[in-house]
Length: 251
Ligand code: ATP
Image (cartoon, rainbow, N blue to C red; front, side, top):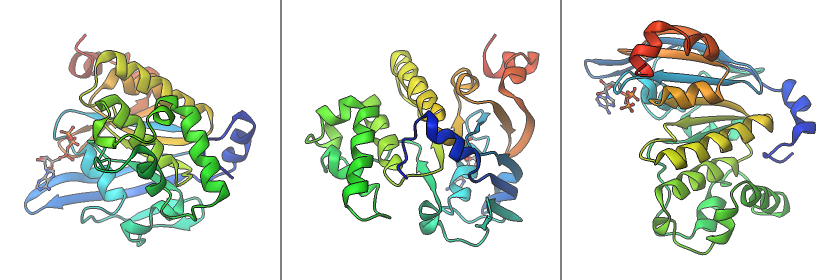
């Protein structure tokens, strides 16, 4: 099955995997970056994590991907127990990751960057089909397929980072601050892209300082403060919460 699912595939995804994270903590020396974070994402659901600078959002995502030392009671992905799975294998279990700051390979062409995202797969027919689907989602990447990634604008590099993660055909995508450093116009384009991924049945975990964007594309959210989950709720309810409006929406 290919990653960019259409509506017909969404039904299949509903029978897919839920991610349940229980008791995730991260410490850097004496600094507690995340403390006892727990959440569940149902198949096809989109969950946001918002919070100020330094609240522990990135550390939570990195810990989930096994990229920083962590303690955790359990990580379940459907019937798979990922609690002890090393970070390098998370992608093989259907979890895609778009890191903060994109981290594309600037000296390689766009297409090579995308193909490297398929490192868990053979570069054969189905992989090329996925490449074609990524190009359908991001026509600008097709246009620039031969250009060096370093020559792309910030927004185009963000599209490339998302496209690269899609090349592994994930069921769940973790995105760390995809709006960072982008103009309001490009942020709107990211919103459109995230909505399209959702429509196609992908589960999404979105970490953002931009609460407005997060409420627009997610159904539920966690608010992190000082490494801990301070509030949880539906995105619709949180965007009406007076405290959230004041602190995170500046209203
Ligand atoms: P931002 O929105 O700025 O990315 P964040 O909510 O993602 O912030 P984290 O980057 O997870 O927050 O940082 C949480 C805390 O951990 C902060 O106090 C930060 O200074 C600290 N921290 C993050 N990375 C490290 C590290 N490698 N070594 C030591 N402390 C770190």
